[in-house]
Length: 588
Image 1: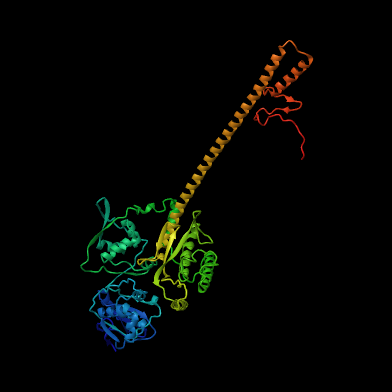
Image 2: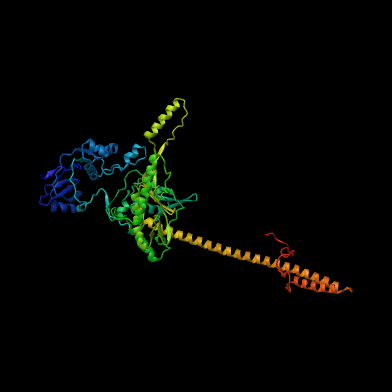
């Protein structure tokens, strides 16, 4: 059989020139599989610009298509899929689900993404992918399609002309011109041109484009939506980093606005050139860090993780299991130990993913002399940088459990019997983890999952953020240390001043006390002098005068003599402490 109808794309091709040989290969013409090998004439036609898609695939068995199970236009098939789902269409026409998916991909018909029908059933907002290409083109779907043993063995001879297939190196030097701005009412506005914005978002990640426009990445997404500019899907830039071939969605044609203005956020500081990134490092260290940030990738799922991550993961899993047991008993977190890092901020399903992110970071940073602590903090340039991870939650109506329903029935029964009963406290909503994680670097920079990218695609930015935050922490630490040093100097000055003041007080009091003693000595001598001038002096009086002179000398601080009974007088002490007291008897 040398001729058959190529029904998958609604066209008929003559393959009379296709020669059969012993090599078990297949030829795919516009998505239709046939046996044989293309002749040299066919290959020559392809080299001249033929629109046929010919792909050689190694296969052990020859295959010929049977009659199609379904023939519809691309628009009809697109509408039916978005109305009752791929599984519904496959079941309706008795087509295996896997074959249905494969042929829809060949026909380039967009299908609902994962989670679309769950969001739709819960009343959430969903986005519908637009059908591109000719909507009236006929598409045939078969019940069987040939399998391929290894995708790596497939050799593409001709690329699809309907979509641009690209191989982009994110490391390549890509220059994007500064955006046009206008000044109005004292504020700065960006001018977003549709064609320029389309080229920009497909050259660089939206986060980088947002920095150029000095706005947030969500603002760029809103502008793209308003101008109907397609943006790279999730995982696009990770495939670019891996050197894989990626597809660029063409800019839709139609009556769409050509440009739009938007307020420029002056709070976001834009670096005028890349030379300011990590400028606190020396040239050698900076080059090394930038190279690591540019080449970091997630390790394989079967690769062994860091031992500290494994140990911490066991702690988290153990705590989460204990929490589940407590919740089953209605105890909540009662009698539980403090949750370890990650235990109460992410779900069990997200834990392996977060651990892989930490593993990728530490494996990339270890050659840079960085360390991982037991509680999964990273030591960068001798500064401990903490990383917090949280998982977003969806608010959904609470479904009453059997136990809660029984409590309500008991309450209603007692209430109807005029008995006192308290109404069970049943929550209205449940908050369930939805898998979208956010990574915050020491409370300063946050990276979160969004429609354009996931956290794993921002590992290079996270590495740079770790170094930037570590430098901020270093500056803050040095500032604290300097302030502490200044406080210590000030304290020492105050202490010296206090000691000097107290010494002055002590010396002054001693001076006053000595002066009082000297005054007392002078009074005694004056009295003695007056007594000696009297004419009537007997032997007893003369003896007393000699005794009095000794007491005057004892009081005199300039002489500081020792008395036989009182000892040496402490002239510097206060008069109260120097009062002479008679000695008495003590009972103890």
